[in-house]
Length: 316
Image 1 (spheres, rainbow, N blue to C red):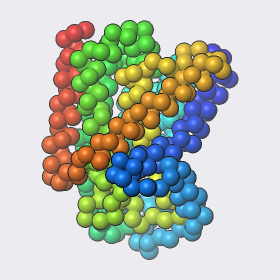
Image 2: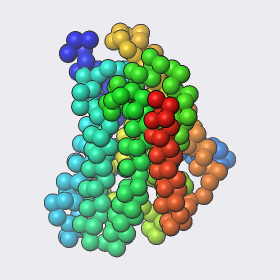
Image 3: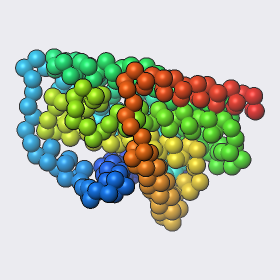
């Protein structure tokens, strides 16, 4: 693969991820509505919301500093950068050299950190409450992400995401090992926490006392709100892509030709739809946990990730 083709593929997958992210969230909302015997908004509703927010003016608190203004761009920029580092439809990619597990995890954590700062910066009670809750969850969730993927990294001998995918593609039997199942379960629970889904958080609620993510962005409006929500939806797509591609990488393109890329894109979208459907079904069957029970669930995910790493070392 020439450098020009490789960089073109990177830009293409970034634009594709940004374009599909609102539709993926809209699909989950629509499926939940249908499973609850409601008509629901159409799957393309998030695109209409983005257009509405981008057309509105920004209203800011008089207490807000430069942190409040910079946070939407930092959150959106860090998320877009991750779309360039995570293999979505093809491997290897141009930025494999820097597409390390720890780089991806801490880029996502950077956005979370600044979002919590912005929640505090506005000087509202709900923003501070949401920020403290978000940091409580992140303290357990972020190490679990690194640990669960480390279970796969041990088998491939590298923390590079592209190398992990290549190893699984060349050794399909590894995908049905106990370490993979344990790591998948751990990462799935963390995905629910990191993306604000039930039973950790309720993305459809407007009751401030139960909010986590929404409480931090109550003061945002206009283009700032559009950037934060778009980044949140893209983060959801990225986490589902990690679940789909790290554990079931079949269908990914290893050669850059039009037919292989088209097939890889179709396979990737199909896996995203399956995972989105599973999350929609789960959210119609479970209730939101009490806040004090959330660390217990996340601790379970950490133990599962630790068992995945132990299993990988034993079976290596």
